[in-house]
Length: 94
Length: 158
Image (tube, rainbow over all chains, first blue to last red; front, side):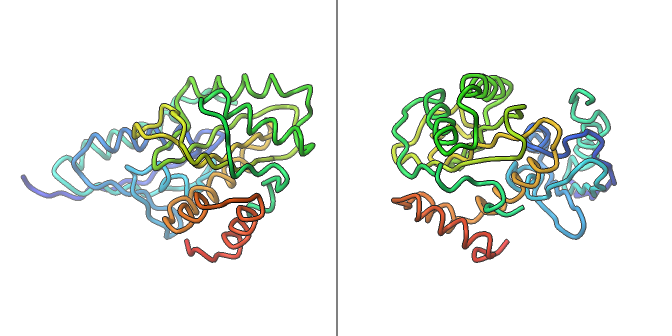
């Protein structure tokens, strides 16, 4: 299978930031893909398949996150993760 | 946000006796009531809120760790405690394993940033195997206190 690298930049839009529920959703979603998926914020990069890793970003509302996927399903992985961010992780607006 | 900013030292529980999810949450909340960090009149409501949050998805995030939490009007600042269960407790954890290390947090509803910063700190330390090992080996509240202080002093790296 061919390798591909896909990246995107997203904003954390939900009011509580990347707390446990979004972190769980991201990790569970990313884990479905073969690609390595990383999230980066201000120079810190974490494995998107790890809840603990995501939580260490402490990404509050308004944070800019770079998403990177590397692997055979990188494009669909990126699109799916970006969609989660755009939906604000389906959290109720406060 | 350092542990010393939100962990109530008198409420640390190195020897949890509970054997179920609901009772361990009760045990941790009771410790915060006893230490004066949570009003006794809010005890039931807070336990109920934490259990309700668990129903949305277990806070047993794997690796033997659980972070039960809720927002509640009964506190005007973020407060938390740490408990260790030597036997481990079934917590519907994401990796199917029992939870042995518990960080329980109660935060005011209008301060999501504090909760997030506390999670950031807790998760950073819990990624460190040495920190987890030392926490599991803690015998007294002072042991846990000392460990948290070392973590605050960046003893375990990041």
